[in-house]
Length: 359
Image 1 (tube, rainbow, N blue to C red):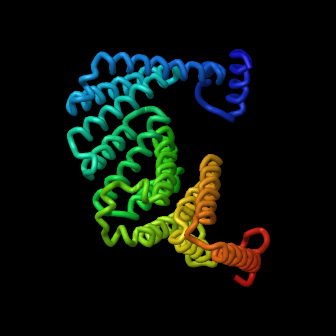
Image 2: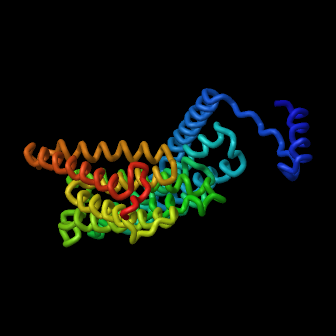
Image 3: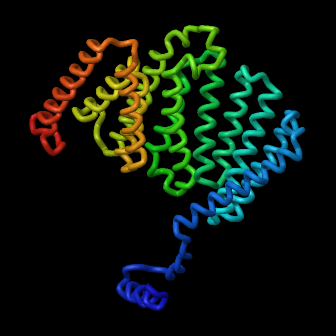
């Protein structure tokens, strides 16, 4: 549609009182996707060459904690300026992202040189820095990566303190708080949406790390504590609380009473998933992301939750600690429970999902 035809159509709409105000300007055409991909790749190549030159010329920087920290902060500041001045240019934004990631690596190097690698304060400081960058950097990918890095560093820091089973629940709470309030952050989706995706990815990765304690747990795990011995149970209780709160919040958004049949059934299902997750870690977290995806109509969250659910179920089925007889019994019991739940839902709510007349 040309500018003249757009103007004529707008005037007709004005005469019929269907719209008001001035006609918005024609949006500038964007380059094809393959051109944008090539520009992004070129930005990364340019940034890597620049950083390689700087690294070769200033190798002494990596040997000093203060110099590494200062240069990393300058790189992050330069990336912030690039994001602010050229937010729509693919080459510039990818260049700025590469420079910022290198700056964060130098900051982490400086922190670990100043503090012991096995000490919790180093990880907690990195968590605070990444959280600050997640809020400040005006770039979708950067905010997502920083949010994920902040929660991952928090997990390592709490593990160094001997606090196990808490970090996954904190990531789940952050994910649930963000995505259950999507209607309230409509004015700033460019800020909250990447933070929500970063929290979801961090939640799944922390649960995946927890499945391989011997490889993923920090070296401080040798000092066992009560939380270390009961990490699975603590995690299941806290994740269950977050999942139940999320169900309650979504029921309130749909104006469904939690004390009714639908509300009580949903909360009971959440508690059941939490109980199952104590024996098969990750299932409740995947169900939480899947639930939020369905509630918000977000296909990316739905796909992420389905893939995670399949992965965690596969890990539980193929782990060597459980015999085939027990696995078969669990599968049979799960199938029977699902059939009973389906029959009960059809009886209570009817085939179309509404509560029956005898409710």
